[in-house]
Each structure stands twice: as structure tokens, then as C-alpha cells.
Image (tube, rainbow over all chains, first blue to last red):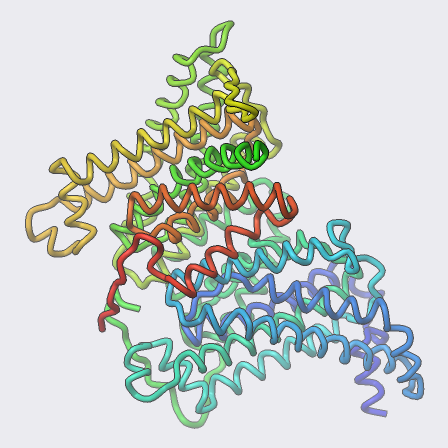
Length: 325
Length: 298
């Protein structure tokens, strides 16, 4: 029973859609997807210290591959799971297609990461940007997934509940990764790559793993996005989208999980709040970004979290001399 | 064969635009180790300034004098813009971590793009050429006066830049700052001035490119700088970032590669080819064609 009602909540059946307007639900859902994106990008940009600006590309791969699966095989898969009660079959199919999207995005992340993560700093930024664009151009040229027309007719499997379920799972995953021994390796790479290497850390391997996890999560976010809006177009996955995610994690604080959540929520909230001033919205954001960088480059939370861990105390913070990194 | 040569001419002309923009990237990177993401947008502003100037001052007949005036005014305006950007956005973060300055650059770029949409309007404008249109036929290959202008201007400006860097005292100061900022300062070079000058020069070149392409294409919009900027950056990396002749070479290669992709493969891949080249060069020769390997120091 408990399990069933969880399923119902996830699929949105029990949501009081009468009480809350569909507009608010949609904003909250998109905010949840952005939380997942921000947290995943923070793993690579904030905790591993590698500046990647091609996140939208991996989101696109997850969105298109999962949508391809559910458009072509969705109904057949639903019949396979028909023995489950209520709306559970649809949930099961969602899980399946999201897993597919995540795996493909992870593979793409691996293929992109292995060559480019050997590069440092700004070269990596440009290469990830380039890959993001290449992915987009290739999708634009595949007719089976709509090409330039966009991909429509995607079943609406995802809902507010599912999105927040995955956002929470993503937060937990990144938290666990960062607080594992592998997480300390990532922090070592972030703080000083040369020193980490000297201590025997296989830096490229650490960076690639972190990149793959991050890409897979972006793939899940993309899948949720596709199965919530039921229509996707490559215009949703441009360089601008990648920049948006960067703005979120920079506002919140690079290297802070709760910071990413806060940043994503603030960004979406501000974006909606400023909708009346549409023309000035992006100008405001770009000014904000510059001012934050000049006056508070660590973002709102810096590397702190809103909730501290009780046991174990704080991580020792290594201060970098200015001009390095 | 004629088609091939025609494509080559088109590619070289497009490539000279990339080269002009790439010069600014390469100069700024050479001095500050900063990817000036806003550079492509300065190029956009240059195109708009040229557009308004030529609209205001053009006579009944298009003439080279008017085109030259539009270009010079745009270059001056953008040189100023470059200095302002450096002073108020980049200088405060010059000594901060690399990611901070990179994000600042992205912020400036977004500001120019969205500010441009606000000031100039989001819809494209049509830039009717201020210079008279001629066409030169060599065998079966046709070269338009716009293509020739682009090519000649970029060669002349690169030559001037090279002369300045290697033969003048200011150029020597620029090389010193690029080699080691702090040591140059100790030797009495006023580094802030030199850095401002570098931004001014790079931005002026981008403005020249903006006016030239606006006359050739002839359509301008506030987001036109994104793709041109990215491809020009790729050109700078391809030639060896920080290297002036490399920027010219890289620009020409990217231009030709792009036109050939459109002509012989598929127009839809035109934006992907530059990045494919970038990835290949970074994997096999990260220092670029003419660049030197820079040792990483602790």
C-alpha cells in the first residue's frame, strides 16, 4: 500500500493540482530539473575544478535517446509492465527510458572526457563547448528524432513528483560521491592537480569518472525534461542553456551542493519574477554574474553547505594563494 | 576545378574575417592568459557602429571613402569599448583564480549580446554596402570587391600589427608583459597601459572585421558574434594561441575548411567542422601549428 501510494505520488495522481495552478506546477517542475542539472555540473566544475561548459549537450543526449525509446517502444513496454497496479507501469517505463538516456549520456561523457580532460583550464572549457555544439548539430541532422522539426509526441511519463524524486536522488548521489574517498581525490585534483599527481592520484581517471557521473545525471535531467514537456527541440540545448546552468552554480557557490540547489531555485525564481521585464532579464543576469565575480567570486554559500555534517567536523579548507588555480 | 578555386576564394575571404577576430583573441590571451569570451560580441558592436555610421553619412552613391569612414569610426568606438571592458570587468579580477576571470568574460559576453538586443533591437538589420560593388572574373572564378576588401584589409592589419610588435618600443613592452607581467612592471613598463592598449587594438581589429563582413553578407544581428567569435577562437588555438601569424594562418584554414564542408559535404555541418578541427588539434598538437609548448610550472 505504502509503495503503491508512493508510485501514485510520483506519477502525479495524488498531487493537489486543483489547489496549485498548473503554471506554478510547471515552474516548480522545471526548477527541479534545473536543480538536478546544477548539482551534477557542480560535481565537475565545483568539486573537481574542471571548467566544463557543454552540459546542455549531455542533457540533449539523455532527452533525445530516452524520448526515442519511449516514442517507439513506450506502449509495448507499458504492456510488459501491465501486471503492476495503477500508474506503476508508466513509472516503470519512465525508469527504464531514463536509465537508457543516462547510459548513453554517460558513454558520450566518457568519449568526450577521455581526450579533453587531459587538457587544462580554459582549453577544456572551449573543447566541452565545442562538443556540446557538435552534439547539437548531429541531433539536428538525425531525421528519426525529428531533426530540425523538433521531436514531438513524447508520452508524458514524468511529473513534479518524479522530478523531485530524481533531484533528491541526484543530491544524495553527489553528496555520497563527494564524501567518499574518491571524493577526496576529486578535491585534491581541484586544489592542486600537480600536487595530486605527485601524491599518486591518477588525475585523468578521477576527472573522467567525475565527468561521466555528471553527464549521466544530465542525461536523466534531459529525459525528465523530454517526458515532462512532451516536445523537445535542439534550441533548448544550446550553449545558452549550458551557460544558464553555470550561472546557477556560480550564484549558489561552486563546490556547495546546497548552494547549487539554492542557485537553481533562485535563478528560476528570478527568471520568472523578471518575466514582466523580459527585455531586461538577461541583461540583469549578465550584470549580476559580473558583479558576483568581482565582489563575491565564491557565490552565496562559497564552499559551505546550509546543513553542516554533525560528525566528523568540517573538511579542512585549503586556501589557494591568489593568482593560482 | 573552377568550383574548387571558387570555393577556395570564398573560403579565404571568410577565413580573413576569422583571422581578424582571432588576432584579438590571441593578443589578449598572449598577455593575460584569458579567453576574452566577449571578443566576438565586440565584433558585433563594431558591425552595428559601422551600420549606423554608413546610414548617417552615406552619399547618393556608395563610395570607398564612406566605407573607410564607417570602418574607422567603428574601429575607434570598439577600441574604446575594449578599454572600458578591460578596466571595469577584467582588471578587478585579473589576479583572481582563472575560473573567476573566465566566468566574468562570459558575463561580459552575455551583457553585450543582451544589451545589444535591447539597444539595437533583436531583429536582423540589412547593411547595404557602403562601398561600390564590383566583380572580378579570373577564368571562371569570380571575386567580388567585398571579398577582396576583406582579404586585403586583414593582410594589411596583420602586417601592421607584426611591425608594431616587433619593431616599436610599445611592441617591445607588449612582448615583455606577455613574457612576464610582474617582471615587466619591475622594469618600468606601465603594464596597465599596455594591457589597455592590447584590448584597444584587438577590439579595433574585431570592429574592422565586423564592418567588412556586414558589407559582404549583408545582414547583422545582436547574436552574430557568438559563432564568429567561437570559430575565431578556434582559429587562434589552431594557429598557436599567443602567436600573431598563427592567428592569420588558423583563420584562413578554418575559413577554407568551413566553405569546403558546406560545398562538398552538407551545409548543416558548417558549425561543427571548426570544433572538430579544434578537438583534433588539441589532441595531437595542443600548442597549435606555430605555437610553442609552454611548460607547466608548480
